[in-house]
Length: 334
Image (cartoon, rainbow, N blue to C red; front, side, top):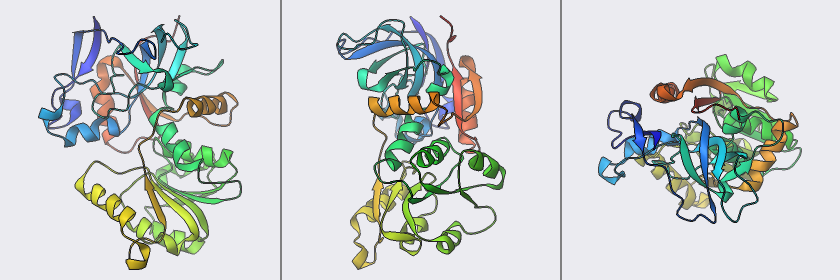
């Protein structure tokens, strides 16, 4: 048996429905050759951990779902085909299910592709922040830019944005980002060359004055005009990647229209791409290396003990967190 936070309904807010089950069954790999059993040390929360659960009907949930995707932990049973062994500390993505990632528990089953070995000298809690947020930042930037490009990152102080800024700078880009007045210094310390304070004026107008952007990443998803007017502040080959966007009909309609409505018929004049971060072992390893080399750092807003997990979700839902929110589950000691 193990302890696990579980829910059967998210009506009225996931944080108000979570129950700590002290006698939850231990997870069992469906494919022992490619899946590890891991003792979870810490979990980092993401908006996707509650947004989908709160949208879908309770009837579509399993009898007892455990949220949580990003983790750091120790292997208790290694996958037979893996070079990793029992006792190795690993980090990554437990599962891609937005309603039952499974990591907010003492033990979780993780695929080989979703678990990277912790580099020597790296703090486990920092590694826990790299899952969905780090991969989202990496996959929305690295394939699209080259050194010298001008990139705009909408939302530089959130869980994804803090990594977006740093990865773009590692790649040699000139970075412009947006944030509130209170977070300007944070974005600058992470490497942003220019910061737009959305509380003091129109982000779109500020971008038009700057112009010439080669790539655009939207980590906020609340102003669709940034896409529809992207041609007024970016080059003709620029792409607009939508990382954010809740599972609502409004966002679904926007994303569908943006992809299908041709520019010559009045639609957007820049290529639109949206995605869900995919587990990539090589990318997790690369970001781990960047952290150990001092090129990238974790930004942690707050930490909560395991028995206060619902409060961690409450903090996340304020949308005012600077960086990541961590739930500690087990000791990081041997």
